[in-house]
Image (cartoon, one colour):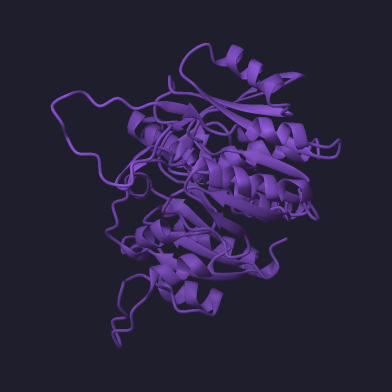
Amino acid sequence: MLKGKKIVLGITGSIAAYKSCLIIRQLIRKGAEVQVVITPSGKEFITPITLSALTQKPVISDFFSQRDGTWNSHVDLGLWADAMLVAPCTASTLGKMANGIADNMLITTYLSMKAPVFVAPAMDLDMYRHPSTQSNLALLQSRGNHIIEAGSGFLASGLEGKGRMEEPEAIVECLETFFEREGREKQDLKGKKILITAGPTYEKIDPVRFIGNYSSGKMGFALAEECLKRGAEVTLVAGPVSLKCSTDINRIDVESCAQMYQACVDNFPSMDGAILCAAVADFKPADFSQTKIKREKDNLHLDLEPTQDIAAKLGTLKTDGQRIVAFALETNDEETNAQRKLEKKNADFIVLNSTRNPGTTFQSDDNQITIISKKGKKEYGKKSKQEVAHDIIDELSSIL
């Protein structure tokens, strides 16, 4: 599963750096292409000449080549790689990765990385157990990084470990397992057409004001990319957001609920499923002022009327072969309200999240959900929205 894969191997200043040679040999033996990025302190433990001889590539350590001033682009490396592996990863580098301290080429490469990142910690037991280290590990893991721990031999889910770097064979096995799983998952939605809504809607009051909400669209866009990765043909109806998506996604930009409603009604009949993630405004002004409303002494009163209910409408259009996933953001009585929405919208399951979980809703990079269906509920911990998208599509794929 590593044949043809492009791996950026980050090496830091640890005594375990000598094991990086064994990692490189195994990766290359299995058909991977390896580019080493080493920190200045890493070169105190192993020479770039040794690493270059193994990879047949110049080792990157500085932003500029000392010989001819050639610029080493961390952005290009982030786009080139299929995965980044930092092994060994010292406590210092771990802290820099977690907190975005971009003071060397390895960290800037990490911050530009578009591919999955794997981290193999290497330090003494006391350093590893220290609350600062554990906090940094938890933070990296919450952002979707894969922590490879000593004695695990697989993608670890916990954070307890002995501190020493995992053996090279087990580290390479982790990468193989990941790509094997990814290869299977890319096919589970092959041939399926999925409609996804994302972001807020803006309901105009006058030419310069609107009723809206704080939705960034991050969750919906993560779902769209996950569906695309797993082989689906994706149509994304996006409210007014600044996010970009893959050019392979059929993106329809809208502003108001009425526009989103029409796009969904037009496209849903040809879909296998719909994921209604957008934070659609429930009300809009009954009257739109063609000119800017001026400030007056008296209070301003707005008459509001309901917007179209997109989920309910698609629920009435749904055929036996189609599936609908609806979202519910609640402030109280979360599960009761979600159960009511499940029936009212004719959805197959509801993705529930709550404003009572800080840092998991609007504009956040993380989310914490509960999936509620007629079969019961599944509760998940706080994760990155990319990981949450993976969980949601696992659930959808199981019923398509």
